[in-house]
Length: 479
Ligand code: CTP
Image (cartoon, rainbow, N blue to C red; front, side, top):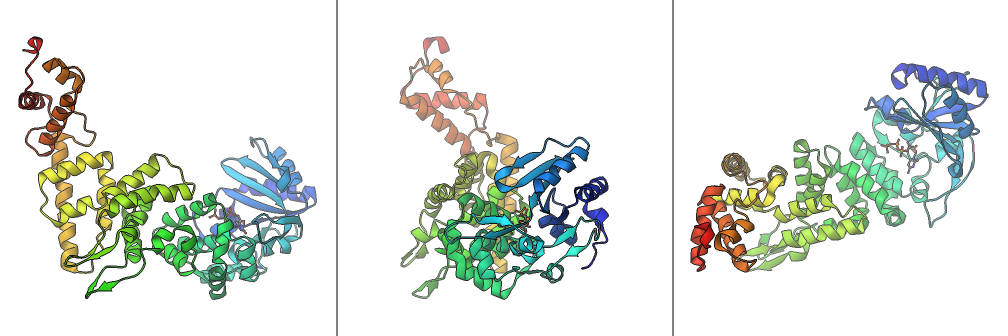
């Protein structure tokens, strides 16, 4: 046992002293355990939830501590789980009695009985999460590290305390946690453990969709999500979570024509996007931007491989995926759909001539999401041909410049028709009718084509011309 000699960095000193005396006065043993210890040693941004495992009643220790902590919020007790929580100065202290768990094959919910510290450490997911630090008078600050978690932290290895088949089968969520930690911390999953994940992959089906999505969010929030998704694919888990991505895998060749592997392309796009946006929903859009390519793929001579309408098909699939994964079907989902639907638009402009009217239309359709869309499309440039890579990026620079110019002139981002339907009705003395829509559309088109500026006066003049074309005459009062 090696003492942890930098306790001051780990915990607020006042809290530490109160914990120490309370544990002593209560005459029980207690230990800080889990993610808090792991992150403290790794020097990661400190977690504000601290797990304390107690040999005895966690609730009793929490009650005694709460009385001593100045301004602590009322204690929360969860009798069924034998846990108690104290919220103090922005820190959540969670107390639990040491337990022994046994699992059945149908459920994640274990049968729990009281146990000793070793039992409790045995039931944890990884050696690096089973490290405990003593809060006891006799050996205060000592590490209790029966599985060499410290060594694993140093060697950047994820290893389960027990046979990995038992650890993962007991709680299959841990397979996702392993992959997420490997991605987040840049750790390697030990070989036997990785094998066990592949073997138990199908057990992920008993995990709630919400927990799965929580882990996917965390993977997508890392700086290189392709690490996590590659592991998900290699272990077979992705097949159960997002089969639509698996369908993008592979390269087909007909008559000497090949298409790219859209699975690996997708992962590259997600990685490319990460330095430019922390927005996890934009990262979801990057992950799903090509899913419509699998169902729309066709070989059409002499053109070659086509994915006609894949953006539209993909946007529809986004809804189905969100629904299946029990993700919110709200504006976030609509945002992802919109990004997927529009994901090829800027590329088409960048590949061809960057005309003013094409940019104007793009800004009009993308509206407030134009910046995100361009970021997604720049990330989508994965060509290995350096000349093409440069050309596309230069064209996007031009698209960006034109967006600024168009914005300055016409403010199309939150387009409001400069002449309202009411004004058209008043001018021509009309009741609601289809001509109003035709005129409004013609004015919008004229603005997007750059024929007139997005201004009231010019639009009003255009309205008169369009009305005339439809055989309308100004109402007496308007003249
Ligand atoms: N744990 C576990 N199996 C799980 C979830 C958690 O064994 N499926 C244990 C681990 O010892 C873990 C601790 O419970 O360290 C606390 O879990 P949690 O707060 O969910 O995760 P952390 O490891 O603290 O890390 P993160 O917040 O990044 O998930």
